[in-house]
Length: 274
Image: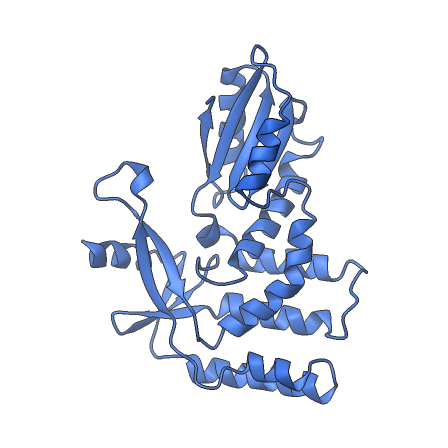
């Protein structure tokens, strides 16, 4: 049953592509080439170059965790790629160091459970005219579009506030490699993830958060949104959204339907009231 669920997920041709061989050596050569140029120019240090070049990389492997909260039998699987010790994981960690400050500046950002508790404690809520709603973005990590996400990152890193000797272009090259060459093994077969990022990668939460920030600014928290005046509060922890809706429950249901019609790869489930 476990293997059947794994193969079912890996059979999604929109998300995964089967490879004919292990691409580790090819990717390692690309990383070495990038590092050599930046090291020669003094843009990264020797320790950084050593860190980025995994000496004896392990092959990432794919597994799933059951989503028991979905109340289905058998429960669907949450895809995870364990990349510890792999050739791409140092790139993910390196890029995340540059991305984290941008994540923390997201206007809707919630850091952790403590942030949520503080939010709830200070909540100004009119139960007669407002609705408490939580939204969940279904399978966000595997559904964010790779090229659009890289464009979001590029715009952030080139916003004029860069103060590192390491060029933005180098970080973007590493992010491109780590995201678009994300491969793994399952049952002695190799696969490439062609959409989204993998849960298990260090910079996956940052990528998902930054892409969602872009989505919110472009589609939700803007005057162009026909429901904008109904949104009293919109806060988010990666793929979990806390919303105070000014209006009826029926109007809120219409809003969620509207959200789900915006992008085919972003789908929202909702819980209304507590």
